[in-house]
Length: 465
View (cartoon, helix red, strand yellow):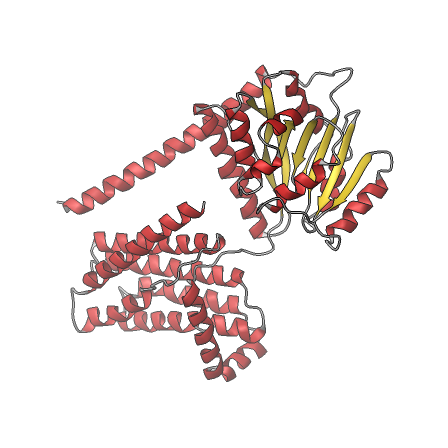
């Protein structure tokens, strides 16, 4: 009969999986419903004889990817009268030359560049908007980030809802378009596969009471009524606060049936799983290993071996432990030792050859986690490790590693982090040859410590978001 705790764990896992499936189905239905609703019930933007003139404010800081093409798309609007104001805080910003090129390429448009480092609060973007506002000629203001790209019908679509006097602001969703490699693709996937559906699911239950910073249109009189940009000067989430203040005035926030294109360029994966002190210790130990194994590293480099080769070899050695454990335990332990040795050598080789990067660290971490999971499942299958401690060990270890990556990405890293896999690998020898039946106790200790780090990680990530 299944142990009571095992049954509870399986029930919790089943319920969590079922809830995930139901949410996925609901999100899919929500996206489909919104698409059909917009196609059937929202008429195309009216072709007004005299559409409202518009001022577009474009705060810029640094040369975003494809900045020229992004800005150019706003200069090709099928709209009769609009002004485009660019804003930078530093004349030496490399983006200034790109803006000047855009202005030169469209001499017949009403384009202006504002260079002003005046700050009205801690939010630099809002300060830039306040500085540009003094150049704005028209009463409909459109705010759009510099990494956004639009089609010629953008202004007509986002301005037309102001025909309704109750509409105080108009905003729209955005989709990610990756430029570059894997990191950019993952960044775009976050926008397209998580952010966008989550918003549509939320709108199924309640009215829109906030804006999306990628693209916002607002009446100048409404902006003045909430206190102008000065009311947002110290808010990090200025887009959310803008919509909230407008909603509190009784105005409607309209979601336009338009997707702005967000150009996503991530040059590298920005997260690894190392704690702050652990990373410093890791760098120190890698330097020590680099000195100890200097001749070996030189030989590997001369043979054309790369850190990725060592990571792959380490992964294969760790996975080979699993079948060999049932055939020859001594040989399996030799391969596990090779896995640990190679895992400790890829970092020093990366530093020796000058190719150390967070991408390599991420790959190494995923390799280690794969071996941890595979070896633990093998020991569970062999009945060396019981189901509950083994499952909890893999689960808490994996979640803590993911939380460590998230915290590093959010620039709130763990101050310290335990990595019990080496203790487990070493104790496995004790379990096999000296003291059978004790490894579960070690796993329970690891689970307790990892759970503490899991809880603190969740709390810090939630607070940071």
